[in-house]
Length: 304
Picture 1 (cartoon, helix red, strand yellow):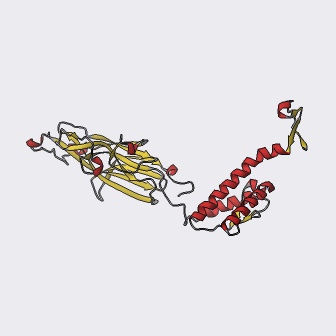
Picture 2 (cartoon, helix red, strand yellow):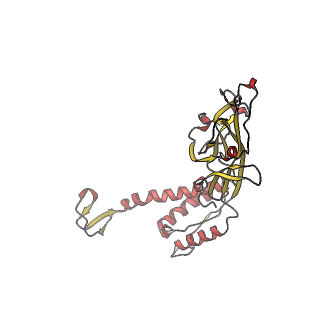
């Protein structure tokens, strides 16, 4: 078998690697072993993409080859052979185009990227690959998902609650608008003797979960992680006598307390997610605690 000698100045002797001082010796089989895995990988990727298109009833008949490696004659020949087999198998001819911007294949990539950025009318759609939600304490049996869960009785109002559930507002695999807003009503109870009324709200993220109202420890929320926290201070509501203490019915077993009612808001703005605690409800709402995270990783690459 023919052996080629390649000059590599400074190369040291190594008989096992076929090295001599300043020279490397390589055979045709060596070249094949180096490049064949790459040719096969590219051909498999092309075949996979053609198969995906065929599943959606799109008969792709032209394959455009661009990029630096597209100038390789070995790659072109290998892909043509693969396309010939697919053409016979599927009953229609698929041609390989490798003359786009001949000599400077990188230019085709640059032009394509600019054109794609200018017009994304046909996608990719903004499909969330993660879910985002708030940690909640919910009235017991308000949701079917509470079945089988042991509630706790709040000493302030005497009512039953389920602690540490997650309400997923943005759900995995759902289409998300460029700008959208989710609002849920919420409240916290505080003993009447308190003078500071601060509370924490926790934002969660999950790559798999999307069913709301299950406890954080439930298997459906396995792998969920904290994505952010905010602390809201509503002490002014009591100091300014905006709200009054609630005196529960003696038969309820409750105690005098304040009920701080507010809104939890999740705002999607492009690739950012902002979350807020607002009071009061409606058009006059003011933000009393907020946070923001980047959610670019929650979408496919190239999504606005």
